[in-house]
Image (cartoon, rainbow, N blue to C red; front, side):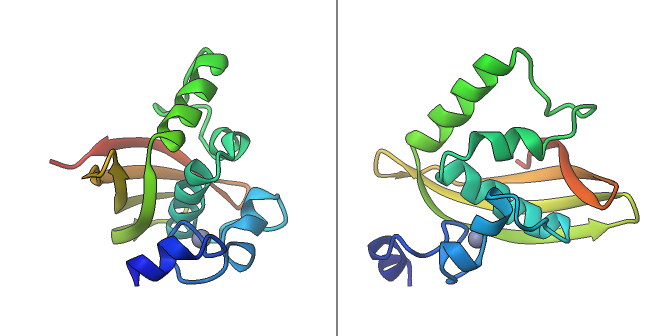
Length: 141
Ligand SMILES: [Zn+2]
């Protein structure tokens, strides 16, 4: 599966086995909004892979710990993170969804310079006017 995915750049980086156009691209183009924080995790993961910097910033809660200033440096960091990695897919490990907030634990599977660079993160989300936003994240040890 992983080999087929690497050989087929049309598949979505989030690892859904769907084409990018039928999976996360409509979110990045602003044609659709993720209906759950789990879907937002996938969309943001593939946004890093596709260098969709605006999408990362637009889906971050300005009142959350994940919001960064100055924005110029933040944009550079987002691009750098995506450029140096091979995106293998993202796995949702646990999700606790409340009315206007959620906690999602996920494994971001990555490779850097031939080495496994995957990490597990516990992330917090807020929901504003029907839109889920990434508020904060911390690595799970
Ligand atoms: Zn996707």
